[in-house]
Length: 102
Image 1 (cartoon, rainbow, N blue to C red):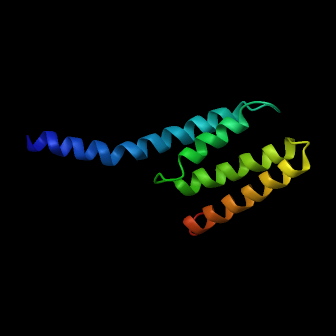
Image 2 (cartoon, rainbow, N blue to C red):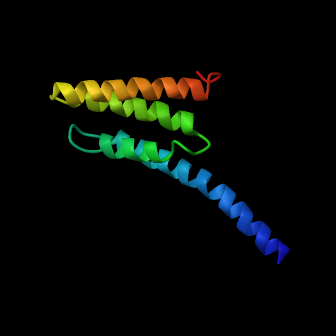
């Protein structure tokens, strides 16, 4: 019984980390095959899902990159500015979360 309980506790603790890693990997795959109309928005959503995980700083800088790309592709000035500002905010958060990482 103790082993079963320990396995359950470890699963609950490790599950978010595995999920976050999977979200980052899925975001990378989507961003890699992006076009002007598909991929980058879905990648951004997957990166955002990984923010609370153990590698949240990586998820944030990748989300910032996706925001920059999406903003660059937008022809709507208001949307473009909003995406660039969101990207800047995410990049700052990434730097604050992991100041020792390049």
